[in-house]
Structure formats: structure tokens, C-alpha cells
Amino acid sequence: MMHVGVLLAPRQLHIPDGFLSVPVAVAGWVLTVLVVALALRKTRDQLGERQVPLMGVLAAAVFAGQMLNFTIPGGTSGHLLGGALVAVILGPWAAVLVMTAVVAIQALLFQDGGLLVLGFNIINMGVLTAFTGYFVYGFLKATSGDNRRSLFVAGFVGGWLSVMVGAIATAVELAVSGTSPLGIALPAMAGVHALIGVGEGLLTVFALSFITTTRPDLVVGEAAPGKASARWVWIGLVVALALTLLAPLASPYADGLESVAERTGFLDAGLDAPYQILPDYTVPFLGETGLSTIVAGMIGTLVVFLVGWLVARVVRSRRAAASSSG
Amino acid sequence: MHYHVADHYIESTSPLHRLDARVKVAAAILLILSVSLTPLGALPAYPLLWAILLVGVALSRMSYWMVFKRSLVALPFATAAITLLFTVPGRELARLPLVGWTISDAGLVRFVSIMLKSWISVQVAVLMAMTTHFTDLLWALGALKVPGVLVSIISFMYRYIFVLADEALRLTRAREARSADPDGTGGGTVVWRARVTGGMIGNLFLRSYERSERVYQAMVARGYQGQMRQLEPPPLTPAQLALGALPVLAALAIVVYAVLSWS
Image (cartoon, rainbow over all chains, first blue to last red; front, side, top):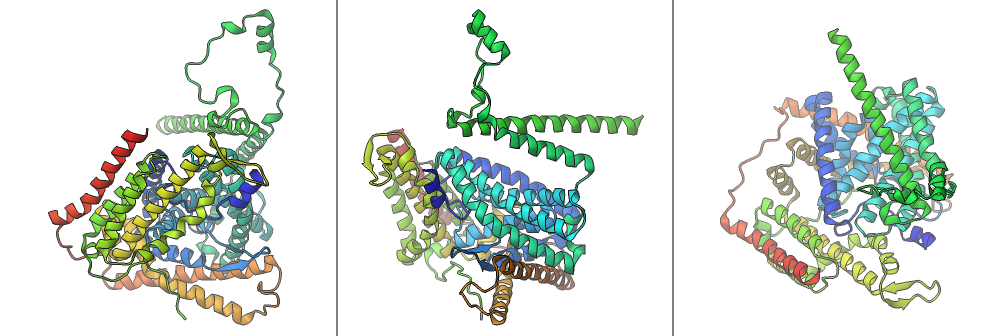
């Protein structure tokens, strides 16, 4: 079923109306409103009055750029989505505005993508691609030195991952809406877009190469974050997430406490938790499959990471306040 | 050689064309919302909703065939939902010969419901695009509280799509003029072709960036202060509001009826 699913997966990420349930679509709108409002504020501080003509014309350039394609073996053609490229050039917040305009016009003018689901379409193709491309490029560029090869690796992986993240998000949204089971949608979309992402990666790299050669002053992404300590945090997170892929191989036997409890008989005295979000390391609608364990593991890892990061930020800002007033 | 953007607007003076753009945009979104709220499996409700759309097409004095043709754009995405036929548990209806997968009745109902919802929603959006000039549509978005900066960015983009699409076409033509094409793919290796195309994209971006600086300076020289000024639109009459409210109320009635009867 899964390999046929790869053949059936849609090649584009523009979700039409009707494929997402109303609660999911509304959630997408709430997210989009928040992110776009933030992006508007950040770019206004950055660019002032020049913001509108620059964003508008670049959005038209992305649209026109999506028409430029090259033939890939197999009869299809590779072409650009653009979120990662624009994010490296202008920074992620400006890229969000540019891609929002592109996706919105595609929906309004050409009905390429629905209106009720426009919220998540903007998130998938505009926000997730921009931020993934920006941070992956910045991180890889900073950790591999300032040479030609690092630009190629960073640009390619940034472009490729941006498409993958967008595709995975689309699959998750479809699954939560009940339109397509996650066990099929996720591998199918991820599989198809792993190939499409190659086109995106290549075009991103070569476009960036041209721009950084001709006008390196324009590229914000050259000064992207990447301090040494931050690098280790990201490496650690990636390793932790990769390890969750091995979760289904974990031993099925009970651990020390649980096996003692079984033998001596007090296992039944244990109470169930009042609420069950990820019962027994599974995701409710995925059942007891290996994929379910992996997804539950990833969710848990990310939650722990976020909590730790937030705590660190609070501590750091408290320290900064204390030292500046003391 | 010019790029013909398939701008879906078709000039006319029908009642629907003359309807206030704010009413049309709000009604379209509310209609699509109503269609989405219809419970899966309430199959008789969908022809009723479609009838509302047909009334709108009649009011626009345009051919339904045009609307239908443009509504097929959503069709490729159907493949995302097709697995529902085989994965939703239910009574077996049919069995595929070679692979042995079974189509369940619940799966079929679900799949058909989603496809109908999607198809009707796209037609509503197409009808709105065909009867509303894009600049009016953008003004309506601004009037409906979409942030002004975002509307301005989109309106700039709309004005420059045609110009930049022509540039992209010129770049493509130049590439064809300079390439031998021995095997129909454009020659060379995939990576080489990607390098050429990537360079074209980078070129387009740089030209656009520098063009936007000229655009900005030209506008400042003409008094641009960050806001596009517009004439006051004619005020919204109760008749126009009623014309927009009627289909929405009809759709909501159908949805309530469907929810009560099918869930």
C-alpha cells in the first residue's frame, strides 16, 4: 500500500478547500495571523518605507522564478518553491511576507490552493520553508567554514530540508483532518518530496551562488547565527531526534521496577494517569505501530528541548536584569 | 512575446459583477465555510449547495462550462484522499483484482464527500475570481481588515507579475537560443542544467531587487508616503447586502438540516 501511496502523493503542496477539517483550517489561520503580524512588525523596523516595494517586487520575482524550470530524468522538470532562497537573501521574516504574498495570489487569482485552508498553505509553503531554509543554511555555513563548498552544502541542504518540512507538515495536517491516514500520507509525501526537494536544493544553491558572487552585500544569510555553543545544541537535538528512529527496536521486556512489581504483585495497585496524551509511548490515532512510537518519541524530545530552552531563556534574562541593575 | 497570465477576471456588467467586492469576498468565504461544515456522508446536501452556486453563475451571466473547466485545478490533489477508499473500516463493497484491496462503503462515502466539498468550494472561488477585478478584490480585503501593508505588498506583486514574467520568458528564450538540444532535455547533465537555471533565477532576483529600488525612488519622487491612496467607493446598500446574505443563509440552512439529519 505504501509504495502505491508514493505514486499517489500529490506533487504540489497547495491544499484545496475540503481536504482539511474546519478546526484544522481555523487553527492554520490563527497561526498565520500571528506569524504574519510578527513578520510585519519585524520587517517594518528593518526596512521602513522601502518594505512594500521591495517585498512586492521580490514576490513577483519568486512567482516568475517558479516558471523557470529544467528537465530532470524521468520526464518531469524541477522548479523552485523559493522560501529557502528568499529567507537566506532577506532574512526569515521578510521571506514570510514575500511567500505569503505569493501563496495568497496563487489562491486568489488562480484558485491554486483553497481559501479556507489558505492559513496552513501559507504556513507550509511560506513560513516553514523560510525558517527551515534560513536556520539550516546559517548553521551549516557557520560550521563548515567560509568557502565555496560550504555554500553549496548549506544551500542544497537548506533548500531540500525546507521542501521536506513543508511536505511533512502537509501530511500531518491531512492526517489530523482525517483525509489521509498518517501511515500512508507521511511516507508518501515525504518520499515524493525527497525527490522534488533535490530540484529545490540545486536551484537554491546555484541561485545563491550567482547572487553572492555578484552582490554579496544583499545576502542577509551570510551573517546568520552560528556561535560555537549554539552549534552543539543543534547537533545534540538532531542526534536525539535521529535516535528516536531506533525506538521500535527498544527491548519489549519490562524495566527493573515494572518487573519487580509484576513478580511481587503490586503492579495492579498502580493508578492510571488522569489524562493520557501519548499513552505508553504511542500516538493515539496511529495505534501500536513502530511509526507511532517514533512519532511519540520525537514529540517528547521536542517538548523537552523546548522546555529546557525556555527555562534557559528565562534564567538568562533574569541574570541580565540582575547584573544590569546591580 | 508576452506572458499571458490567465487572470480569471472576465469583463461584464451582470448583477454579480456589479455587486460590492466586500460582499462577494465575505460571501464566498462564508459559503466555502458552510460547505466544509457539512458533515461527511450527508450526500443529499451537496447537490443543494451546488444549486446555490448555479444561481450565482446565472446571476453572473457567464457560461457554467467556464467555471467548470477552471474548477478542475483542484483535481490532482484527489490522490491524497483516495486511500480513504481502502483504509476506512466498513462493509466491503468491491475488491480490486490484482492487489486484493477492499473498498469499503464508509470509505467510499468519505472519499466522495471530500471530493464534492472540494469541487463545490473551488467553483465558488472561481466564480468570485471571474466576477471581481483583482484590484477590487484587494481593496475588499483591506476593507475586511487585512493589514494594509500586506494588501499593498500583494498589489505591488500583482502589478509586477506581468513585467517579471516577461523577463523570465526572455531569459528562457535566451537560454534556448544558446543551447543545442540533442536529446530533448536541454543537453548536458542534470546538475549543469540546474546550474544554468539557478543562475537565471539569481539573475531575475537581482534585476528585481535593483528594479524595486528604482520603483521606490520613482514613487517617492511622485509623492509616495507609504500609502496607496484610493477614491471613496460607493456606499454599501441594503440591497447589495441582501444579495450577498441570501446565498449564505441558504447554505447555512442546508448545513443545519444536514447536521440534524446525518450526525
